[in-house]
Amino acid sequence: MCVTEMKERRNIGIGVLKGGGGGERVEKLKSSRTKLWMIRATTMVLLWTCVVQMTALGETWGPRVLKGWPACFSHPDSSASAVEEKVPAVPSRILPPKRVYKNNGYLMVSCNGGLNQMRAAICDMVTIARYLNVTLIVPELDKTSFWADPSEFQDIFDVDHFITSLRDEVRILKELPPRLKQRVEMGRLYSMPPISWSDISYYHNQILPLIKKYKVVHLNRTDARLANNGQPSEIQKLRCRVNFSGLRFTSQIEDLGRRVIKLLRGNGPFIVLHLRYEMDMLAFSGCTQGCNNEEVDELTRMRYAYPWWKEKIINSDLKRKDGLCPLTPEETALTLRALDIDPNYQIYIAAGEIYGGDRRMASLAKAYPKLVRKETLLEPSDLRFFQNHSSQMAALDYLVSLESDIFIPTYDGNMAKVVEGHRR
Image (cartoon, rainbow, N blue to C red; front, side, top):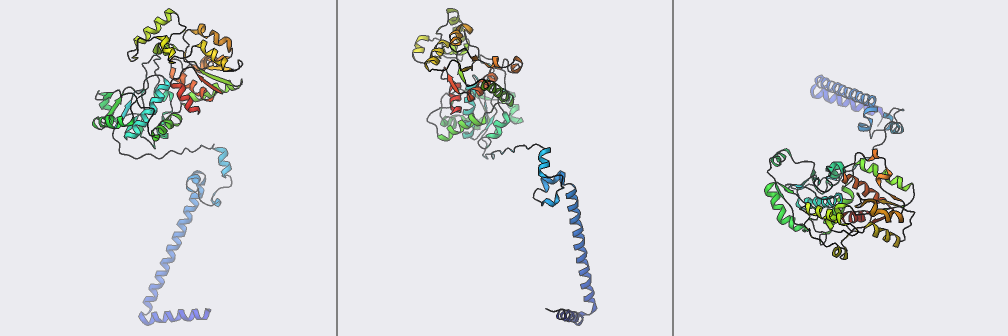
């Protein structure tokens, strides 16, 4: 369309307006156009003001607000590489989504036994809480056993990791909500030991109705309370996930464990020998091979002193013939030689104090002179926070056991089973 035609059409339009209502309509049209241009101008000024302000704050807000904006809004000295040099990158932790379910109540548990017995029990209790759709309170650890370890859950395990890593399966709290906590402190709590080696149907049929009735149920013994065999695969998978992923030791324990492993690796290959020959083990099992009469009497008195150790009268010889006793240190030396273990290998003793001391360890030390323990590898100052905390010391042994070239248990107990599964 040419310019002449455009002018003609515009004049025709004005003529029509004049013919329909005169100069009044023309004035209104001019006024509306003026207002429209004023609105546009004001909007542009506001937009550019915002852009200038955002650019000025680019260094502070850039990573959050201007993340997707073009590079022209960044200052030359605030490039990505410069930011990375100033601020070390923090790895982002992706948490599993929370599992949404109707909460049937709260489950409190008190674990009993040593570290690995309690560890296995925690796996069971998480699994039970998940399949009953209840909230689990962070487990209480045993403080009345032979070791009298005062450690709390958070002294041994990373409690925040425990809670968050399993939140897609079960809700876990550090303590009860205030109203229920007050009820428990007043002694209004239903407490019981569940039946040993029960399958999950026992907890659905017997324990869940109690939780719904009382809102809070306390299971005061947790060792071997969930059957190992014949369970659905989902239950076994969750047990494994808790044990090998959810239960992570504190950073203090893990750091010291890495130090021990580094010291051992610096001297070549090493074996971890879980020499289960401590006083409590012998008293509980009644296995007294190689002990003198005074030691036999001492172990018997200890067995009677703990009422929850149900078996009191034990024939040591018959128990050994049934294969239910740990290897003695002397038998261990013979076994290692029969397995053709190189005498120059380092052997890390993962155990507490060996009953009988140097007298019982003499033959093993003679056959394998490179026997070491955490106490001989580390300075006393390194272990001062762990003294009188047997479960924390056992946690160190557990970490070293996982990384050893060879792991040899002398008794098929809790640690032997858990470490074997973890290594596999």
